[in-house]
Image 1 (spheres, rainbow, N blue to C red):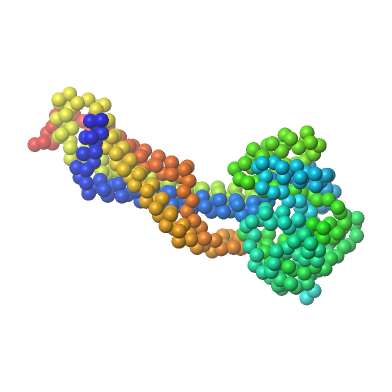
Image 2: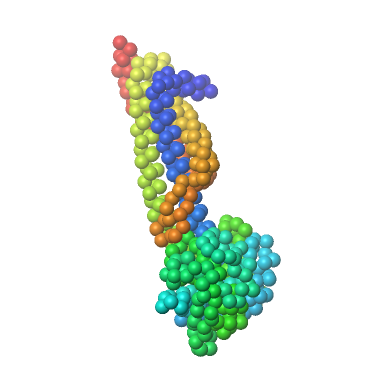
Amino acid sequence: MLILKLALRNVWRNGRRSLLTISGIVAGMVGIIILGGYYEYNYWGLRESLIHSQYGHVQLVLPEYSAKQAQQPFDFMLPRSTELLAWLDRQPEVETSSPHLSFWGVADSGSAKSALVKIVGVIPERENRVNTFFTKKQGQDLYSGDTAAAELGVTLAEKLKLNAGDPLFLSTVAANGAQNALQVRAKSLIGSYSSDFDSRIVRLPLASAQVLAGVSEVQEIIIALKSTDDTAAFKARLQRELPALGWQLEVTSWDEHAGYYGQVVNFYGGYFRIILLIVGIVAFFSTLNTMVMSIYERTGEIGTVRSFGGTGRYLLALFLSEGGAIGLIATVGGILVSCGLAVLINALGGIPMPPPPGLTTSVHVKIMITLPNVAMAAAIGIAVPLLAALLPTLQSIRSQIIDQIRQNT
């Protein structure tokens, strides 16, 4: 306790220098926490947009469907899909489940404009609870009873020069090999966060898609969970329980399909690590300068203490306590300033950003304060001053006592 009191007094012996050092560490911590919170919100937004606009949390298909769906989309129809949907809806982790019938076709606007599209048959009332990150650009919601209506990706609609309410012709090769066609109207134009997705997606009520494809089942069930954190555990449970219930299915999760997400995390994670290194170096040399000056100014005092029996362990504890006190004060200050700044930015609606590369929707990025980022910043804020205090202290302990005492003269 005495050492701590002495350490605090020594820290404020030169208050201006200590405040400058603390301010530098606080600025570094604020940079780490705010920038880390910025990245975390981007990761969260990208992850949830991919889940709630394309993939869901968990997907159920027959084995080999993923590899052969482009060539043989109708050879992998799920057995007893209605029964499976009812079972999934009873599971406590499940928010909703949505059946999908997917196949490729051609969309023709009737004005010499056509495009290859991915037609997806859905139950809109279920699908809308999965795809909560869709943005309706034009038109009205699609319902199961809209047998002659469709939803189009906004980029696709621009390519075909279509607006909500305009007629559209869809054609495909049905399951029996015949050429089928269906006339619908574009009831709504929807946008996700992916330009590639928006340039090819056409959603139909499931009954209309089944008529167009000439089938009565679906190939895939998309599951939206109440919490993304439950994904891995729920996937593992499905892999255990579904075979016992008579379904031999391939169970995948969103991250197995969203390779882009992993690339983004790895790419920006590299930037963040570089920033951590820079902040650590700046904080280290800032504190090192303070501790070197403090020890140099007190060299005679150190020699006197050593001449009266003060041990190297005592001096090491004293100066490490000073470095730790600087680090602790800066850490508390950095966390408080960061949290206050994050609250202010979020209250103002976040930071407006243009659409990221490959995406179509602009965003307002908020700051997400997470425990790992705060813990990492705190570790740097405390550990760096301790290390900076250690080096000059060891050098001082190794010096000759008589040389240190001479500093008094």
